[in-house]
Image 1 (spheres, one colour):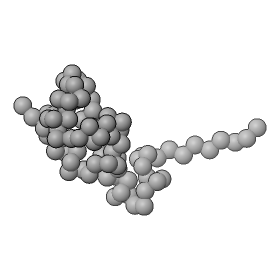
Image 2 (image 1 turned 180 degrees about the horizontal axis):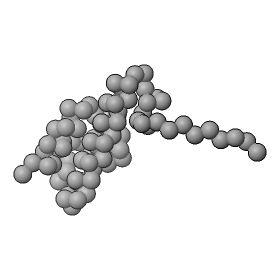
Image 3 (image 1 turned 120 degrees about the vertical axis):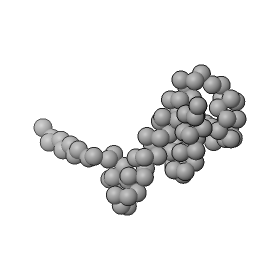
Image 4 (image 1 turned 120 degrees about the horizontal axis):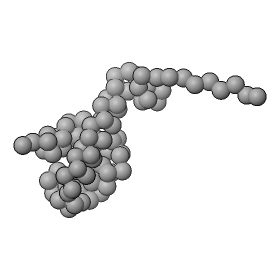
Length: 87
C-alpha cells in the first residue's frame, strides 16, 4: 500500500506563489470575487443589469462569474464590491 502525504496550508495559494505577499493578494482577490458574485446572485440581477452597474463588458462579467480572479486587480474588485454593497 502506498503512503499518502497530505500537507495542510493556511493559504491555498501559497504553493503556487512566488512570495507570501503574492499568495495573500491572490487569497484576498478570490474571497472578494466570491462575495461580489454572491451579491449579484442575491440581488437577482440579470447579466445585463450586473454588467451595466459594474461597468463591465460581457466578457469581463463572464470572467467574474466564472471565478477568474486573475483577470481583475484588487482595486477593481474593491470598486465592484463598493458599488454592489452601497446603500
